[in-house]
Amino acid sequence: MDDVKHSAGFDISRLVMRFAHKIRPLARDGVDSSVPVGSAQYLVRNNDRLKQLKKRYAGHPAGRHSLWSESYLKREIKLTHFRADNAYVYQKRYANDATYALTTQYVLAHDSFGLLTRLPEDELFGNNVIDFDGKLLVSRDLLDSVLEISFLQRELNFASSPQWSMLDIGAGYGRFAHRVVAAIPNLDRIFCTDAIAESTFISEYYLKFRGVDGKAMVVPLDEVEDTLSNTRVDLAVNIHSFGECTLTSISWWLDLLRANKTRFLFIVANGEGLGSTETDKTNIDYLPVILESGYRLKTKEAKYCDSPSVQRHGLYPTNYFLFERQ
Image (cartoon, rainbow, N blue to C red; front, side, top):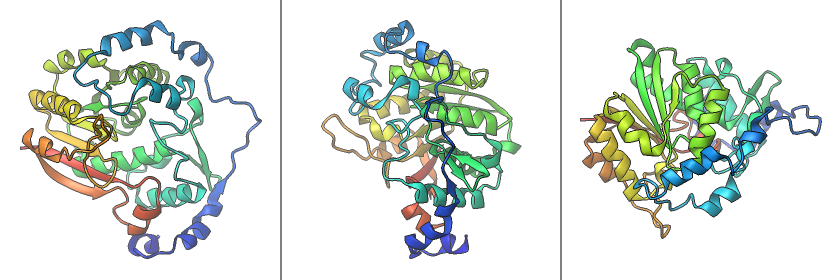
């Protein structure tokens, strides 16, 4: 991997030749077995729990959506296949087998905590899974989770610290919470919240299905202020969510973190910088609002920080921002 790590001009065609052969097709019988028994009956849009959540979220100050409209949700999210290629996690758009192979090879070479082989993967709920070299099943869910948790472990040293409490803002279907509970044994708990009712509905189901709901607690949007009023949160996580929100919504969340005196804020950007998405589809730099909320930038790092080539050609490159309260 030395040339992948160090050569900004490495030829992508050579990368394809070097790693793409490691991808193998999964054996399939033509039947979609990715939806567990009982899921199709519960994960429906006329479920009373979902209808209740949608009613409760209406008019909330964090719920003025610029991207996640009703039409967008119905087009992008199939409730029974919430781990498929969709608005929660792009998987096949702008990516191919070579992209996955290159990224997997990079993660294997940089996974100093052994998470990639310790956290299992499957095709459940429509997940796009790749067989790497006949030895490892990977997905964007897994690869991104390993890189994010590894970054936080390096920066904050979870393993040698007292129990951590986290808040996942814009938790989606609970992807990060599911992984971090398994990866960090001394995690106290992680609260998962989202301004989209469907996300709360799905993550409640998914985290219970995975058996991690003892530590991964889903908090409906209209309960999050009360929940955090008497609860310490050490680290707030926002993965690709603020970039899909208006500045007004982002400011609401930052006010919540300021009231809670949350020490660390980890943001996975939607691109190079930190920009909102307004209702007129313009973007506003929200870094000044973060700084005004009492945070300073502790670390900014490319997702594939050890390889400019992988940062250009790997799976959905972006930047990590870690802030600490002053």
